[in-house]
Length: 175
Image (cartoon, rainbow, N blue to C red):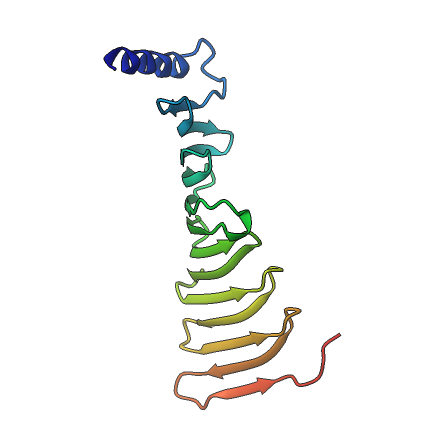
């Protein structure tokens, strides 16, 4: 058991101390059956730490991009890729931080803080079209926008600070 640990430590040391320090060789940790469980990589756009389950599916990823973005992704491991779900947390340097929930088609729900620091909620169809958007801005105005299946605005409910709310609806089919 100790010998196996020593061999693994020596292999990790050798991998991390290659003769060519610019070589993009990831640092890999394997379990007793030889399966990759953890990978640390100095990718071209920044460091990434990834955790895998025994089946080789990515379960957790932390990435610190050189552009200033930090991302954390958590994923389920299911036998059917159609049921695979992800939760992502992203903090870019532009100020639009978000928490997203995804399935195999892509993002389905995002909750974030916009550039102005105000909250935004967006729901998407499997085809990645916005269906519902809810948010507010620094002036105190709140807004609910409902989209049809094609992503076209169909109704907008607005509420300004100290003023009456307004409702705009589009009843005709947008082509």
